[in-house]
Amino acid sequence: MSRYGKASRRMLKFLNENPGATSGEVSDYLHGEGTIAQVRVRYRYCGRFSSDDLRSMWTSKKYVLDSMMKSDSYRDVEILDERERKLRQISRGKFAYLLSPYHSRTLAADPEGRQIHPGAVNRRSQRKWFYRVKGTDGRFRYFLTLIGMAALEEHGAD
Image (tube, rainbow, N blue to C red; front, side, top):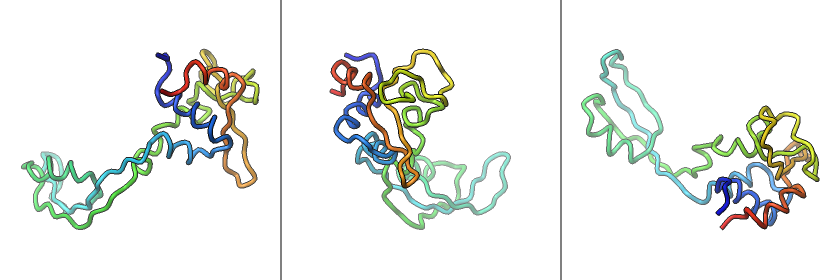
């Protein structure tokens, strides 16, 4: 069993099969095809320090049915609309630690993986499995480094 997280190992496998993938494609793959049911509700929140204004928002259908409808704090709860959203649209920054140089422990500056990405804040314990290149369309394309290709054998996803 690898000591690295499942998302890092899945990204290794994905980039091996799809070199030059964009961050959106990588994020879509890591999130999977999961969806969440959302509803748009109108309600009055009658909390201790809040006004009695009419509010509306999009939120999880499960939360509305399990909590809002049964709570004494929410009054006049009315469901206005319903939709299905992909998980990647709800949690956009979930995998930023893999794709952003600032947070990443996996981004390198060169295809060989010899140098740490110059934007990386944490300069220690860098794996340097991936590198990115800005394409002609202005979007970053991600590739495996030589170190990433070697790590694929040992740490590749299950």
